[in-house]
Image 1 (cartoon, rainbow over the protein chains, first blue to last red):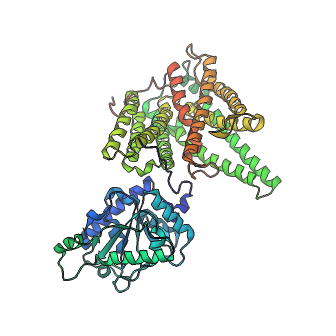
Image 2: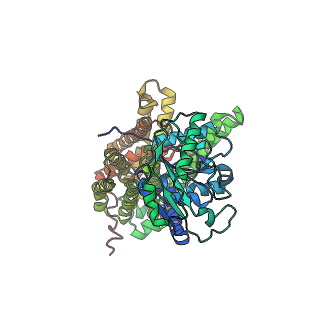
Image 3: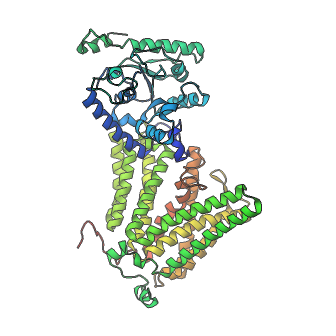
Length: 254
Length: 350
């Protein structure tokens, strides 16, 4: 028998009104119900409206913790990535969201926390507290983080350069980083669109890698960005290759 | 209600004769029993005293005095708790059972966050479902089912945990879930089961008031006379003097109210009332220590932040957890509880 390992909720003792913006938040029973219902709705919407599909699901690690990264060009991205995970893990998925858009006021913070299970991250300032609590969360072992290393939605649909934020969160930690490519979201719902267009969206999951041996300093963060960028770009489907050939092409890669 | 009518209803046997629907829903009987009224006046007096003490402290020590603030916040929280707990009990047995079930679920939710069990979603929801089932058994007044849920619920928890298909953490998860189910489902269920007695209003109120006063007595006696620690490793604040003082004062309280509440039949003598008070006080303090031990083991100070000035819900209802079943079976052994009331009112109505 293993030793008991009792880990109270990260946000135990945080007042109810401050819970949405608490970085160590973990959804309780009520939030779990709401999120399960919301994720069912989102999955149905993606399937019906965007003919949502996932390729390479077998690359997903079985258990948390892991970090999912992808290109970012639309508000659909976080929903599409979260929908990759099976329902039983839904309340363990935490998309990192810009605090200035998603947590600007109390109602939007409550919605982001309850429906999306998002965590507030400041875009410009990399606050020490934010990084430590995110790293603690990964070490704690119960969380799946969704992170868009570009830091903002691409206005052209192309995948821009990756910022140091990813490296600052995962460098030196033995956590799998799962690269994904989100295809079609930039045409279905580019920045500035009010109603998403009825265009297909698919997620291509790639083989995971870790940055456990990369040092947690400026140089290491750059290495992390480059490796992650290459891994995500490698998944970008060739427009000329039809979808059935897609999975074989990915699997043949190292 | 004229005095003679009340005397008729609480005749020589001391128990009123109410129909099931009167017991469940009729709030016109709320103030029938004199002990109910006395207890409510006592609580109101204590709340007013606390409020005045806070105001006096505020005037003498200045507006921003931490002690004055603490006393006022605590008293205000107490006032809200008293309203939330006593109004359903006064309204009728149905609302009382509903209130205890809600309390059980909220307390369990807090416990699951303290122990981390909430991450095991299926198991955690299974415990909540079992708590609801216990509430149903109580409402139905089906004692056999009520007692059967304890072993069968354990079986359900085992099955749900096995259904996960992963042996890692099996013993830990089942152990924590079973402890939660026993404490908040089975033990608190006994508090709800009092509602099947016709005298449920004074009985439940006396239990709640005595358990709360027990904490207050222990605190005051400990502050005044306390020197030697009771068990410093578990709870450094508790002293032997506080524990003994609480036993004495709580026994006096229970015996004082109890002699008007529990009928003076051959089965229940004055020394039974003394034993009843001692039992309640000891169980209350053991429950308090139990929660302290859990908190120390996990490494936290408060179990939550629901009640301003008190901490979490568990910090407030910990002493109730063990006192409720002890009182239930003690009174049940001598007097029986709800024996004159119709049973299985939902599952096999006449």
